[in-house]
Length: 301
Image 1: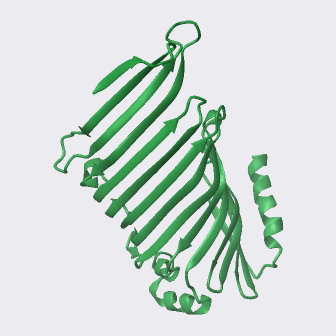
Image 2 (image 1 turned 90 degrees about the vertical axis):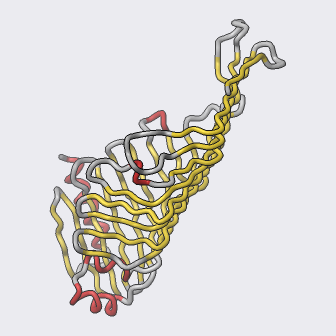
């Protein structure tokens, strides 16, 4: 249903649309996704031609978007299963200030392609706003939570784990190529559950006991733009193990420097031009000199 008409103010016209149900079709056996309760409105200012046409207040809402089977979205060579549900709401006032919220839920979802696979349930929520006459969008809430998660890499498989990723102070500037900057915090219920992905069976028990691995808590300051990723500060701890470092990816190969510490033992790791260099028994201030050296090579090239 589409409606339009003049508002009380003679220079404005209001447009409104309401779609009780919208579904998509494609030649696959999986059930089709659908959108329920889509509505929107828009005011156009200046229809009396006494001033330049401009957009006024507007809003868009999706009460419920449902995908009974994620297999409907699968492309050739990709396996998808599970179901999804989402909702969305955004509003723009007459001064161009913007507010909105989105929620998504994936139940018993799984993804597989070649040697990589992942499964679990996902809950995500995003709240955003933009001040009037400003280009920067602030994400005042950005949360992704995983439960009963499993990862597969080749023949290696993790144990079930849970994880939560929270973003804070994230600012996105669409006018300059979708630049984004902010802080991320990650909590993983069990680091030991991820050991099978990186450590073989004979060493798994030794590593778990020696490092007293527990839950993982990590934080990072991240800056992103098209073709560029800078993780400026990384600080992660799990039991007796702590990792600090920096990571930058502006070309095909990432560059980084990390210091792994367990008690008095420090190990330094650098990434450069696709090569990894491990330096055992380094001092506590190794990272302060290693990262500028790696980063200097990058910028000079």
